[in-house]
Image (tube, rainbow, N blue to C red; front, top):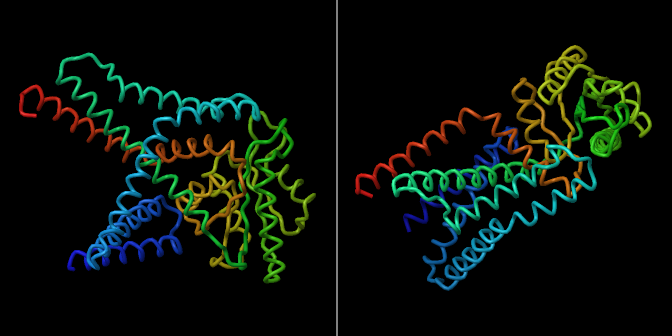
Length: 351
């Protein structure tokens, strides 16, 4: 009984923390960790509850269901290279060939190499060295899978945001232009989503927000992205009087940094309510960068074609790895130490 009480308390605490983060500080990958820990606590709580009330049958059913799901996940991971290769071909056909469009292909090759390592064990070396290599690679693979799952969980949870119709500013983040001057489908989706919220707020609360179109001019672009975005927005129902352009930024961090300066120069109050708009896969990272520049803003995302999502998610994951590189390097260092200890243990005959 006391174990059930402890688990219940842990579950309640995690749920409260998760709710607090989602409401007040969702611009963090912590929401993924909290959700997964909360689900784990709920699972343990259900199992203990079934055993306490004598319904071991339900606990057994739950255990079997988890085993089936686990096996399905493992099989999916082993065969995921098929999907990744197919997706790479689809992306190449629909988009122009590029490194960013080849991320699923690279990931697919990585899965094949891992499969070979697991099933064929091609490492031919003395036992201590083999133990060191296999221990390190196993921990590294598990760590990557865990952090990928957490990233995806955080990205999905971030979509559960239903903003109030009280915003003073709507920041729409830029993306590359087609042929150096035209708004493409990805960027058009962002602008359309921003205009949709702009019009919805006017309809529901009779409040006109100011739209900040944020994006500078790339080396291969004829005009700043924000200028092309403004022209597109005008053609799709936005009022010129409610639009402002930010023409200096070259990345998401600068989008937030320079847009914040525009808001500070325009607002009559320091207590302004801001929302930003980007592609759905990009909202979490954009929110984290908004927090880093000291701007209290959450984001909504426009839909992304399904075929493009795997590449986009991989790119976001890599961006998060770079963003927290010190932590990840420390974890890799700890894994190397643990693997080295295992190898030395085998060498000394104590493991």
